[in-house]
Image (tube, rainbow, N blue to C red; front, side):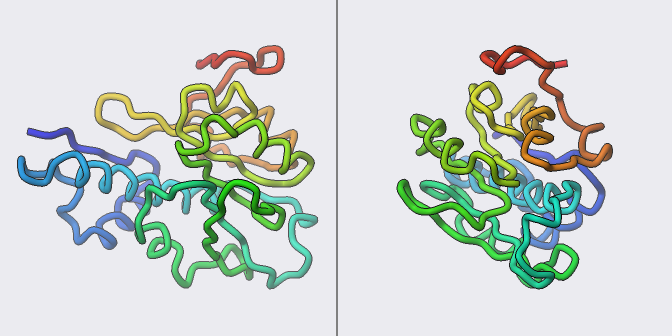
Length: 202
């Protein structure tokens, strides 16, 4: 039997995934479906997490030029989400800010984004991406082992067939972001270390 991927954040996330994937799609896939189907399940879970990050992180008022300005979620590089992330945020708002999804490639101007998911395709270029967003209130989310040590703020990982995440709290606070205790309580926290040259987990 192939592994199952579960989400352990909040009950609302479970309901969201169930609605998106018609309830049973988080079960292990059959032998004919292969790794591609399994990957799709994993990224459906990660898409639901991203939506919860929007709800449980507070951006400073200066991150928005007007009360109705869109909240921009950017995917940098090759998107692993298919259309599921678009479906998760469809018609959703953060207060009065409608959520919009934008796809970016290397060299694009990321200013105006509020959350950026950095695809694995950009793992060798993260330093450039972080530099381009320096000084902005942007939540940087990734899924590579060295992501937090290079200045990322939230990093996905899979443990015991479960999608989990770790948080670099000082990096988030340095960008002016406030992360809810509800989110911190279900995350692994990177301990303070000089320049975060390595990942340290509680």
